[in-house]
Image 1 (cartoon, rainbow, N blue to C red):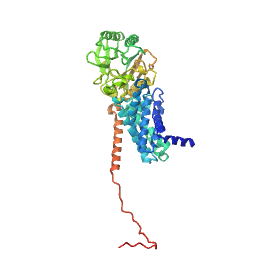
Image 2 (image 1 turned 135 degrees about the horizontal axis):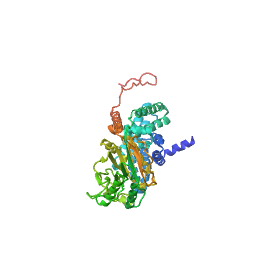
Image 3 (image 1 turned 45 degrees about the vertical axis):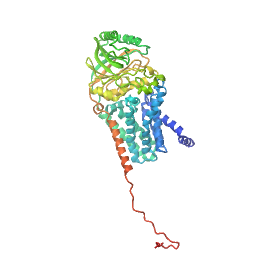
Image 4 (image 1 turned 180 degrees about the vertical axis):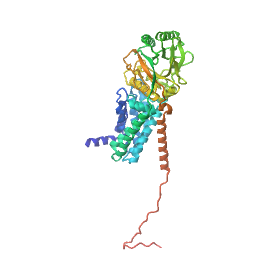
Length: 523
């Protein structure tokens, strides 16, 4: 009892409380790879929600939301610290502010002793508000959708089925809803019945969606080879290793060979000798090769990151230029203002140029949907490629700058979600690991190539061509969340503008004199 009171007094102090909120916001990172404690995601938000609901004022609740958001962003992106230095704290502070309204809503619906009605509404409003936060920060200019809460469920079969219905958005909503229900169950005795009822309803709805979601019907197979050279100092040494590993695939009857991001350091128009060497590999192996060129283009100004398909006769003409670039890593936003970032971190010395549209490539009997590195985090890009007819999604990545961090594991896990969302297999090919392949249901195919591997591996990849509900209906959970918040805004606005009811003047008994007789009015 005494220790509980001590903690309570400590949380009454502004700075310790802010630190506690930041720590509570950081807890969900344990559910992401590399720890990958997926089950922890369903309880990780409880301390943060419990803290915000006890805030003495709305301002303090907003601050709890902000501090928790800062902790969340720092934890999920901590591996960027060696590259961004002080910028990581600035970015976390700016994006953490997105959770300030969420903290306010937590107090609004769960503060004090909420009625069963308020507690039930919280199970809809708070997950919706979280989804809107994820929507805003998913904008490419703000860093993209890295660390979406639903992506912690990438290795859970039933969750992957739900991703085919509503994408990673539906998983985020589900995870937050369970956290809210558990917080009510633990903290608000009067509302435990609706909390238990909500958990049961969530389980029932989830089970129904799982049972209803169409399964991926495998209707073919393709043999795809991934070439992962490992860590090399320069592009020439890396290319030589890729060449050596690719020769080992001769006679393996592969349909396609995939190299990682920046696997070729020169534009093939400027270096026809490199184009001839890759074409010779295509003839030797009997398969076209998807390489990735990170170089200044010969046919237009600027540096591009491009997926280029090379066949036995050279480049086929199929080329995709990366559209969504990494802020600071591949370009500096408002370079005139923030260009000094190059002096304190590993920021881009020169901005890369963007492509203008997504491309589906033809490689023999296969239609390929290429994505470059950071782009595999965006659910909409995989969905659009599937709508355009892609048989298989291909992510080309390089995370060598973060080789000994959690980044390679986190990045590879995203491919499982994109595969499950679209009902298309996805190949995640990297220079230095982690490389992995996932089937159209999001389940992993064959062994992965870890960060210590330098190898070429062939995967027997199942193909499917059905249309998932997510591909058909898009980001409908986000639309639902926006609708919930719009209804909330209208309701609150009407309540604020509604005039207070004024009843008749209360009856006042006649005043009495000292003799206990009614006072007579003065004439």
